[in-house]
Length: 438
Image (cartoon, rainbow, N blue to C red):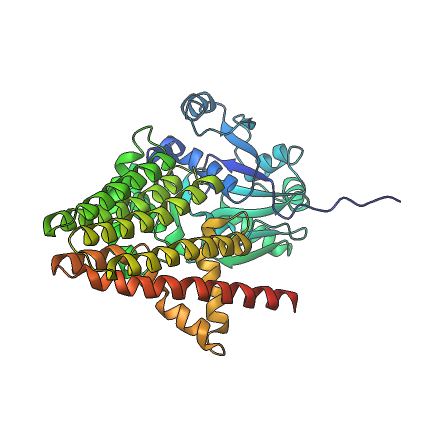
């Protein structure tokens, strides 16, 4: 029995054009740097982020040597990138498509090497779909971002009159009913025609670092963490190094709390807040430099959980040193029990819900909660009170109560919240498993 080969779930090949075809642009535009990285390389790594593994870079014969010399020296340059050199008479989009049609898969991405764009834009076009082309447009302007079929490329190459702009290309394809268009968010795309466009690209890149799940406290922290991340990407420091350093700061915070006393508690609270800021920095460095990984996400998660262990262990020890009351060891034991069980149950749920994309857990969890909060009071309560347990909020609360010298309130409320958290986590995990089974 023969088995038909199934098409890939994601498009595996990306073709990068180093000329904009949107209008006049500087010859060196693909080599202009945004967040220390050439724009051409950012385009390739953005495609790689959504699943592309084969890359073809199309460049003019007079510039290809310069382009290769710059980008291939970069430590993030992927293996196996092919180059297609264009001669003087290959200036039209027809000629380019004619040359690449024998080098591409049945479906491929056509991307600009003269623009920055967020990977979220490519989610719309990353899956194969039919024999036509799909164009992303911003405010009725072509972005240069396309999903192309080889058939559509062949039709253009063989039948179209000379086409020298993206608008001409799209108009001709539309006449042949070979083009679909979809609007893209302008905040996720920035054309680079000259060095004067780079500051705007940098500003947009900073905005892309904010997560959809960021609350008010996380957004406040990013006002500090993003400038730190911008400095770190100029060094050899990796995101995992930042995560481990944040863990060491968490330990130092716990030690100061363990020594007890008003001043030590304030220092411990300040270090607690610093580790919270660094908790955002490691992810920002990873996204800015395309070093995101499943291991890095789990390392960050483990460091987050250990932060709570160090913080609350230090508080309990510090309070016990200055009082013989059994209230502190009993409450502290109840708290640490809740912290450990919450870490285990939430970690298990992260693994079940997000699988090999643990960084997506927060968004997926919120979507599941919102889908059921109208009919399930337990999930509704969890959805609205979850922010009290988040890493971004806790340091603010700790600092506030350290200032008024009333950390006992943090101890008691955290003990209650941590034990409610693992119960709700178990319940929601069972609820979602039963829903999937149904």
